[in-house]
Image (cartoon, rainbow, N blue to C red; front, side, top):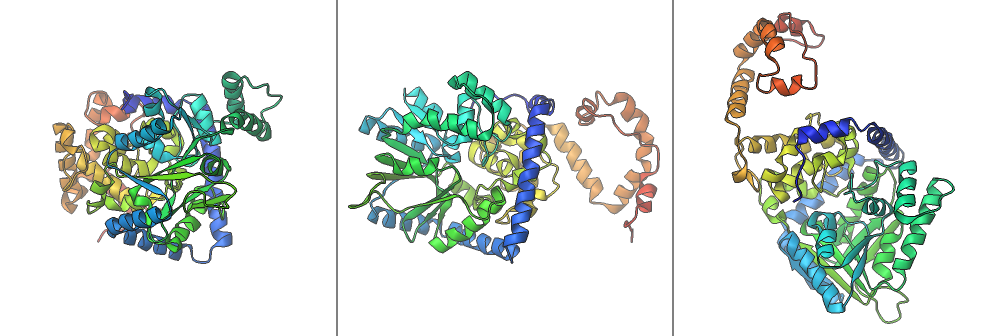
Length: 479
C-alpha cells in the first residue's frame, strides 16, 4: 500500500476543500431524493424485497463452495474459461499471463471496483502494459491520476467546469462550453481510436449465476458492452461472493441495486454473458475468461459476524446517506472501499492494521443500516470492529495481531464502560460532572482524548447538574 496521510490530517484537508464539499453535497442530496422517489413510485413492498434478497444472498454464501463448483462446471460447459485466484496478486498475474500469451499490450476496462481492489492498473503498468478506463468517471480520474471517490459514481466530486479543465489540460480538447453533451463528445472521440481494433476488454461482475454458468453486468453508459462484445477476448473479474444460485436470485438483486445506487428503476444496459461467440453470432468475443478471486473473503465468510458484509451488492447507498462521508469524501478513507461498507470490508480484506483508522469515520447514527438494500447491520459491525481495534473483540479480523493497542485508551474506555453500565455510577457522574469544568477548560490541550476535540472545537461549558437537567428533557423518564 502507498504511504498514508495521518487521518486527522487528511480529514482537515478535506473539510477545507469547499468545492469538493459543495459538489459532493449537491450530488448526495440528488441521489437520496431519487432513491426515495423511485421506491415510493415503483415498489409495493420494498422491505419485503430487501428481506427476500438477504435470504437469497445468505443461502448462496452458506453454500458458497457448492455454488462456485457448480458455476465452474456450467460455465466451462458454456465455453467460458474459469480461473481461480487466492490473492490480489494472483488475480493480476492471471490477467498478465493472458496478455503475454496473446501478445497484447493494452486492454480497455469497463467499470470494475474489483480491478481497483487488486491494483490491476498499477500492476500492469509496472509490466509495461496499459489498462485504459472507458467509464466516463473512471476516465476522468485516470487522466487526473486520482482513485475513485465513490464506488458507483467515481468522479462525483468533480463538477462539469472542473472536468472541462481536465479535458483541456490532458486531452488538448478545444471546448466551446462545458455542457455535459460537449464533455461526452470529447470522451467518445478520445476513446473511439482505442476501441478500433481492440483485442482485449476487461469487466467486473455484478452477479454470477451458478445454475446457468453465466454472469450479469449492469451499466448506464454502454462502454461496458463495448468492452465485452467488441474485443476478441473478454476477461471478467469476479469476487467469489458474487456467485448466486440462479438467475431469479440475481434478478432480485438487480431490482434493488439500481434504485439504491442512482434512483433508477432499471439500469440502462443489462449484459448477461453466457459464453464466447458462437457460430452465426455477429459479435461477441472469441474467448471469455472469468477470474474467481478470494482475497480474504473466505476468512470473512468464516467469521460469525463479518460474513454479513459479503452480502454487499456495491450500490453505494450507505455512502449516499452517511453524514461523515458527505463531509470528507471517499479519498479521506485512503482505501479502495470508502464509506460505511468500506469501514467493514477494508479491515477484513486488507487488514485492520492497515485500515483500522477509518473506523473513526463513523458517528454510529445508523443511517447506513437503515438504507442498505440487503440489510447489512453496518453500524453494529463497525462498533464490533472498534472493539477489535482496541483489543477487546472476541474474534478479531485479519491483521489484529499487528495492531498497537494504546494502554491508556483501553483503560479509559474500560472505566467508561464500567460507569455507563452501572446506574448508580452513571447518575452520580452526571450530577458531579460540573465540578470538573474548570480543569477541562484550562487543561484541555493536554488531557488525553479531550485534547483532540479541543484542537478543532470549542468545548462546552458544564455548569450545571447534568443529571437534573436530563430529567427535565421532554420524553425522558427515570424509573
